[in-house]
Length: 126
Image (tube, rainbow, N blue to C red; front, side, top):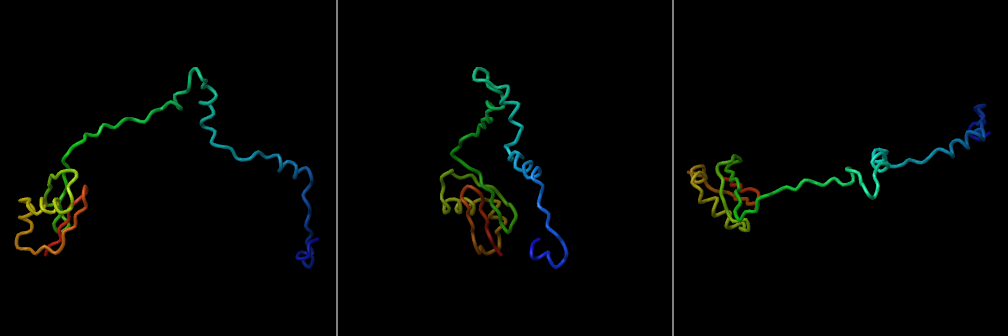
């Protein structure tokens, strides 16, 4: 008996040896069984379709120009088209020159212009 159970009158029984042997023979976890049927049917002469799957090719048009939304006061007020390699100053000038943006800024003071090249132009005005 172990010392901590001695006062309670409980005895610790050892496991029978046959249960210990059965526990030792349990196989370890393996990888997921789903690929097994494909691997079993595949051969070097005829590989399975699952192993030969190709990702789809996406055709994206490559352009020199990008169109960026322009927000004034948190609402989209217009869009500007600028060269793809334009820096923040060029994008800001194009956004402030847009007619719809000028109309939205009429009578307001520009507090801040946030330009994220390739993403968005945000103008804070009050």
